[in-house]
Length: 438
Ligand code: PMP
Image: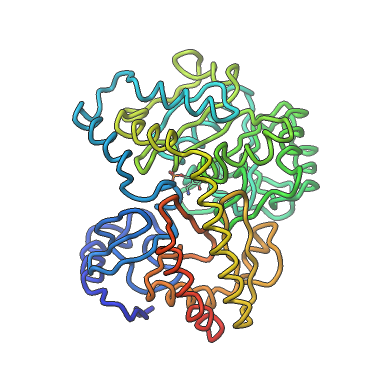
């Protein structure tokens, strides 16, 4: 696709050429290449608060916030200062440190987990949680949902086999059939499918993993009671319930998605994975849960797991400072900013007759370019992608950086002030009209 931008993007285009010569697709994570929407990916030079500045000098209101982590906005002065102090003390020792203990205490205090182990990415967190679940139960099968993304873990890059309760096939070349063949992929929000899978394979299921509220097919909230049902059916079958809060953790609410359902309904996941916000913009993630399950982890127990940079003092300092600053006021602000943007998006799209549905869980939301509510991946896939592409580029041209894919959540921060929000609102009519014309 050619670049439809009316902005000057020569410097980004030149860097993209250089990058493609030395890196597959020119990027280190596929969605950054703008594959779904076309055009020149913007190389960002710096960021402050709600704003990104690219290498051509264009400024954008950032509605992806590094895909979730930047809850307080970019270059928050207190996070920057804490990180600078940490860096001055050295960047990695390969020993236990103070900030990792404090961050673990903070996470345990905020969530349902009793013990937590740090890793460096969300992928590692889910991979390790699954290994632990298999080691703890002595079973091998993993159940997941179509449209839920848990990182690029072999067993989780699986596609549904034919029929409901069947073992899956690899979702990408490079995943062994033997690995995907231990995974069952089911439609999200479908209790009947879950019950059927447990009826067929119950005594072989190590764990069921789900995004606590899916955000990787756009935001698809769990139907009321769905997570509680999953927790219960896992318990009845001796399987572990893994709630993936890499995206929702400390984002959907102060306590993540669990704060919106589990804490209210009185159930807890056996294991939970975290990432993004808890790293404050650095590579840090975690998995945690029941103390008796976590006790199976090396060096306390037999299940091996380790990491040279796990619990890195700079990363855990950034995460700890971020979480300490993530007060109720932060979530209230993000929630209010989200309400303003959601209603303006709905008005602008309605005015132009563009089919749309806005879905949210806590402070997290996304816009689907279709006319009926989305409860699973098949429904999310019915979007009008050309309409989203036109909308995306019209917003980008007016200085608003949306996710370059129709299947992603939109992220805000406590730094999204009136000026940033106004720039989003001002861009909407032209973008809605572009979507209508697509
Ligand atoms: N789980 C969820 C729910 C995620 O959203 C992501 C990343 N988008 C991951 C796991 C993987 O995290 P990472 O990209 O840090 O490996």
